[in-house]
Length: 335
Ligand code: KG4
Image 1: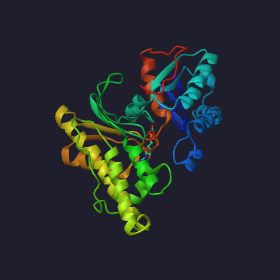
Image 2: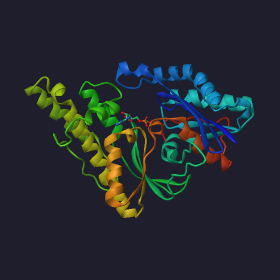
Image 3: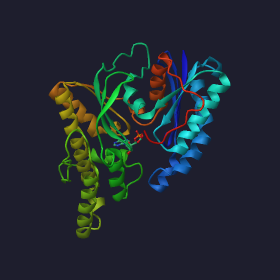
């Protein structure tokens, strides 16, 4: 059974092909056009998706070693995301599936991130979580703790009440005059800095919810004071600033996750989303595995940021349930 998957929710155009749930190809075109603006420009993203979608799908099918006539279904990201971006992928998927006379499967982008741990690159690839597991989903738009009971049954037990973790990193990076997206830059600088050099405020909110707006403000105000004393403060201390910021964010994320593990008794813990590429967060997961006996699941780098492979595996599970989408199903920007 061959499934083609399409992801276009934000600024990555991605297509993947899976055979019986095994990944054959995963092709992604990223959009450099946004770098000059310090953030994703929705209209430019839609236009780039329109340019990229045909070549990306073509490459994915070719790399899988099949032709479009072999396909049995098309999975696509229906939302959440940028409406203009989603419409390109959704419309393409509908037209493509209709022209081939095969069913379509709509996928929730966030569910895709959470199920990225089930992507298998070969028959021998069996390192997957068992249900139930906890998943820390951290990206540019979300910071959630999800209790995953089955492929279809997921419960958000905690989430950010304001900014997402990735958004906070990107904004602090912007304040420092570093490039966009800030995540990989902060990650690189943090490796050479002292994580205990500076203290930034940590939220104090009940339950498993997160908040990152206070940290962002504290970073901004501190930086403003330090710059008054030394106009080159950022240049002189960017490594220490990055390391201290990263440590604060990782500490905030892990504290709530530890509490969730303690309260639920679930020791299988996964991390997903763009921020799961972060070295400090990955190390914190490894530390918790050793210290607290967690069985951890950390995705390959290529499955941390937006990709069609995760949409493909989620679509595959829905296909097995015969949970198909109708041609008039609209995209949705928010859940
Ligand atoms: O999941 P994703 O690709 O897009 C969505 O938000 O859906 O996540 C993008 C976020 C951005 O905020 C980016 O700065 C962050 O993930 N990110 C990282 C790293 N790589 C990407 N944050 C920290 N360290 C990284 N290495």
